[in-house]
Length: 455
Ligand code: HEM
Ligand SMILES: *[C@@H]1O[C@H](CO)[C@@H](O)[C@H](O)[C@H]1NC(C)=O
Ligand SMILES: *[C@@H]1O[C@H](CO)[C@@H](O)[C@H](O)[C@H]1NC(C)=O
Image 1 (cartoon, rainbow, N blue to C red):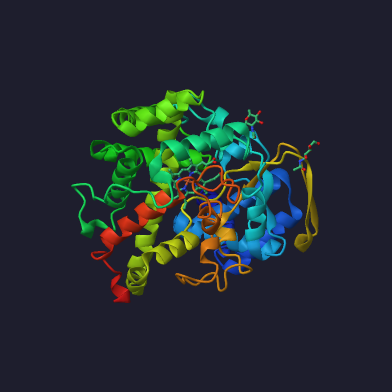
Image 2: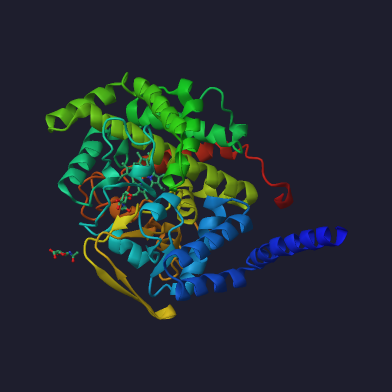
């Protein structure tokens, strides 16, 4: 009896520890890289998906869960080592659960500066109508997408009539988006003090407060905690993780409370009138814009400010660099810590053959297949950014970062963020978000608690 018990538990221990040990060896960077190379070279379909999930799990373990500050870089490192900067395109297991479940398990990913640009500057780049970033819309509960129409700006091919019309409306109806826009003076919400710079909610509240004052001329102080909750609930959907029905209802409820504030402002009224004049449903367009402000606007800008403050906290000599040139500093911070993963998945409109010479594989992308774009790759392409891992505000080609999807430098050449042939799909919030993030970092920087080891 005792012997069988022991045999059983020993057996169990061994069975459990073998995979655990194998997983632990993956924490060695070289082994992890070799594992990645092997999976994309020899596996396909579900096999590659499973191997890819193991790699993803490894990165999260190695990075202690720090997605923006570490996981993305680990992923980019192995991708570029395997496929080479010259090729600029690679293969990945689709780790977004919703995307993999409803679509292909493996897809192409464009990561060099040049290859990223190939899509981001294509005046007719295809976009899937049935996706919300990495979630297939069929898997989203009610309340995640805008209430009045699930067809969002992100779903339209670049330069399609609808895409152009909606972007023109943003440019004309939201003066705060313009380059050099006159914004209301920066103000921290009442409950936030300059010594709160290491508190995520305080930084996010500061961005949220100023974002809605700037964009819509309204005070959302009362609903800032709800907006913070909104972002945390929404983020998994962006990554294609499942959301439950009650979470969708919560999102809709919070959005409605923000909408009630926004509607009190003049900007909203004029925005809707302008839309109607142009034959667009005004209320529906405003509903979409509030949805975008809560997602790309609040989430993206808050993460940019918060990640930058975290970086400064760890390395006090950055305080001086920021003071020397806040604009150059923030541009460089956005290059190394892009808060938005990149352009949304794009869709091949024609079948395309891609040759991966480094692993001896040819890929036939089908019409309708999705492809991904990685700005953490493009932003660290040594062909454009010398010593890409160094933090150098004002570096050569500083304005060529792709964090806002098109180059900052190109965007500046147009009077507005819409209808700009030099930057056909840049983020319309580029200038506003940069301004808000910069002022927020400046507000907290004097009292930011610096890491003791660095003092
Ligand atoms: C004031 C804050 C912001 C606003 C109002 C805003 C607005 C928007 C809008 C309306 C789009 C859709 C554009 C289209 O489909 O043509 C978009 C896309 C995008 N935004 Fe922003 N955004 C903001 C902040 C940010 C920040 C901080 C970043 C990153 C540094 C960012 C990066 C992007 C990227 C990469 C896209 C994807 C473009 C695409 O997939 O076509 N945004 N943003
Ligand atoms: C989204 O899901 C539906 C239903 O499973 C599927 O028919 C469609 O092809 C999916 N779209 C993409 C782009 O994967
Ligand atoms: C894709 O194919 C269509 C029709 O076959 C053609 O008109 C179009 O120019 C092609 N697009 C590209 C980007 O090659």
